[in-house]
Image (cartoon, rainbow, N blue to C red; front, top):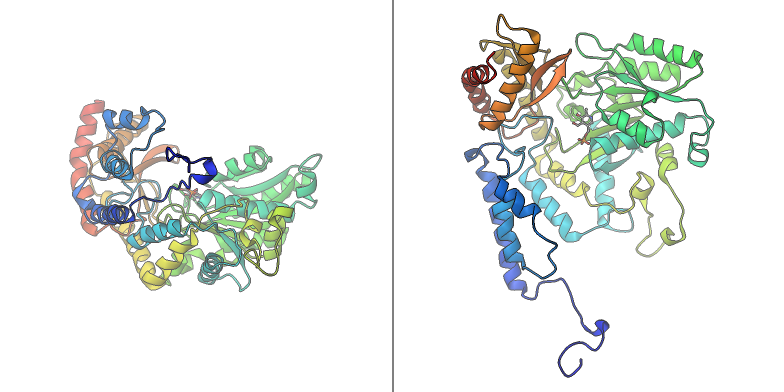
Length: 496
Ligand SMILES: Cc1ncc(COP(=O)(O)O)c(C=O)c1O
């Protein structure tokens, strides 16, 4: 050190980002855990959604880059005041929008523990690799996949589906796609229902195949794909010089929760020598319940299956999984070589960079920990019972909402999604669309419940998607009881 106590060179400074006072930081950290748990335990006392007011928004977005330290206490105070209260509300018992999970306290703590470990879950000779391999083994077993199935935890259904489809594309392209790309090749085509989630087109764009590679197949009145129509399209496309590579099935569509005839799709894929990928982002975990399992017949025949644990697995974001039956095809899609990633049979990197060879990412966080802890702590039987509870809640709600004056059920309830719309006698379909959207927004704004909207058979509907382990039947009763007044309010506001 120099005489004025400044370091002679930056190398002598011994700066660190660890706290100067561990005791004080520990007290703050304990408060953070206590506050988070208090907040979770008292969710029911607040409305599901509280939007950030203008002053909060500008306090967050108007601050210049902080160059001087403000200290953890100060930042945490700001978090409590400006960040914590203003979420979309998916932890709340009356949140049934889109298909979002609540998260669980054990999942929250697991994420904290994973961040504390700060593992780079790429593989290597460390416990995180073993935990992730074990979670994949358990999930493969639960899904009815054979021993030796490959898989990887992913950030969400989109990424899990992308990985599955990428493996299928490479396996069925019929040429070395990794080396040559798509240049000069016939168009590769994939087939799925018109109800399939928009990840497909995003994925095809990203993979350089273009949206035209998706061949949308019509659905029946039950919103399940028309398998015969899919077969005809495949045959016609092949005759026209296209190269069909993949059949896509939905184990729960985003709009209505419909589950395709996965057995028939598996047969079709086998007959046509195509990859069979199932998007089970919403529903696949239903197989944990012996009562719901028959709905998913054929799912276990998929070549690849993507599903979220941060939807109907109740875990906090981000957590999804993709299973790939053919481990070699999986590895062949993503494995790379580089001198700096050399694997030895001893030392830290022993055992390889398993997960870098199963997906596009190199560095990745330890998502498997929350799945491992939750599966062990809760047990699949308890999770299955709550899945069944959600299906029963959606069905009972659907039966009752149709009895509310001016409300009609818009689709059969296949799983855990109820779609309904506002259709007073003497109004046009367009007026009903307007009213339906207004009712949806008023439910959100008044704190009755957060549902979301979509379009079913060309008409606006309100969706109640029940992937919520905190909902009690009384929560649905609260929504049902509030509806007549909300509808009257919406009619007054729209003049319909
Ligand atoms: C059927 C389906 N597939 C895929 C996705 C995308 O999943 P994620 O939001 O986890 O990326 C969703 C999202 O709602 C979905 O409903």
